Every structure is written in structure tokens, then in C-alpha cells.
Length: 294
Image 1 (cartoon, rainbow, N blue to C red):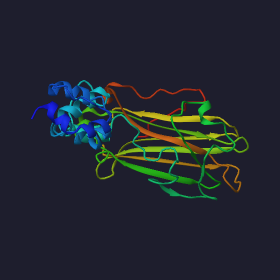
Image 2 (cartoon, rainbow, N blue to C red):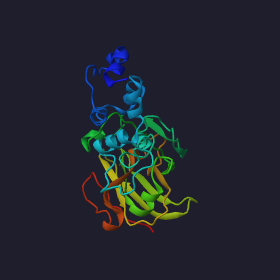
Image 3 (cartoon, one colour):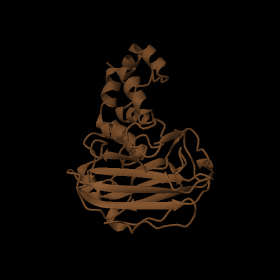
């Protein structure tokens, strides 16, 4: 059966999918090129039922490798070890996204393990007593923030890199830079302390490298960014533990302690880890000093 006949037999499906290639007898290489521009979920849910040929092509590694290359998820020069399954790799996209789940408190405390001090954590829809975060950085999409109290309020999350789609070969041989960061602020009426600790762990949770940051802020409305880039770390990293905590320093009942949001852990595949120096520091309100604690 020709491609034209298959498309004609599925005319309604093609119309529902907003694509009409009826009357075109396209080579498969051209069809793969066209399909690679479409949304990944739509390919599986809508276009794979157009015909047997379309389903075969949509299930092929060729199509998903093309999509990964087109969307910037994969390039041989940056990732010398190709994924075993390009379709799975496309949807997990481990090296081009924030690996922290619920980084902006939109799901309150989901995915985080936390311990309350004082009157505990509070999720604020907009920062109370502080400037909007948009005044200091570009914010893509909605966000909330966690506000702390007069006792240490602590939260942590452990990221399973293999479960997120990372390859052991990439983690051990390429060792791409790992960028970690978070925005934090005080209130206009209370001095605070904020702390961030990040550990790179092996499969047995042994610490391979770590970094910690702490800052005491006077009363004020500005936001600041704690950030660091892990470089030259040893092979064997399988987990990343991200822990942040805060409190006020005037022991006031309520939620006058430091607040934080936009927790971030992501890879940087632009350079290999061993070739880059340590993260530089800055003095602006939007950056904070960092140091390795080996």
C-alpha cells in the first residue's frame, strides 16, 4: 500500500491532527524531517495513529535522534556517548533542564523532606515584606516562595541522576559542569540568616564533593542569589543532595525569617568539567560568593 493510500484511509485522523499530506508520496527521510518539527507528545498521541508507516517512523530511533539534535538536547561534540534510547532520552532530557522537583514552592512541600523550627515554614504566593523577585531576575512562569520562622526551618531533596535519565558513562567520563543556585531574601523589618548546602554523592551515598554557603542579611527587601558551579569532580556521582535552611535572627513569632525560591540544579554541557576553573564570585545584589568545602 502506498503512502498516499494509507493517508487517504486515515483522512479523518489526519484532519484531526491538523496535518494533511494526502496526495503526497513522500520519501521516508523527508517525512521524518517533517515529523521532527512536531511536538513530542503529539507525535505519540495523535500522529502515530495516522498510518502504520507513520507509527513505524515515529517509533524509530532515527526520528527521535533527529528531534534531540534539532531541539539542542544532543550533539556528538558535547555528548560523545549516544543514548541507548533516543525517545526516552528526549522526554527525560536530563542535561538541559532543572533537575530539582518543585523548585518554586508551587506544590508547597511536595518532593521535599522538611523539618520545622519556630512556627515552621509558610508558603507565600507573593513575597511578604520583600520586593518582587522579578525586579532582580527574569522569572519564567509563576512562582511562590518558602518563608522561615525564628527557629531553623530546613528542607532537602535528593536527586537520583540515573532515574532522571543521566548516563553513567556521561557522569563518569564527560563529567559536565553542575550548576546549583537559589534566590533568597530578608524582609524589610527583620534580619535573617540563610544557608545552602549541596553534596555530590556516589551510589552508596558517600560524599564525593560538597559546597556550602551561608549569609546573614540585615533587614531589607532585596533578593540575592547563592550559586556555584561544580567542576573537576570525581567519577561515580549518582545522587545530588540539595539542602537549604533559614531563620530570623530576632526571634520573632511568625514568619520573619529568610525566604527562598527557584532552587536549581542543572548540567552545563558546554565544556567538560576538568577544563574549567572554579566559579567566580560577584558583589552585586544578584550574586553571592561561593567556595568549595572538600
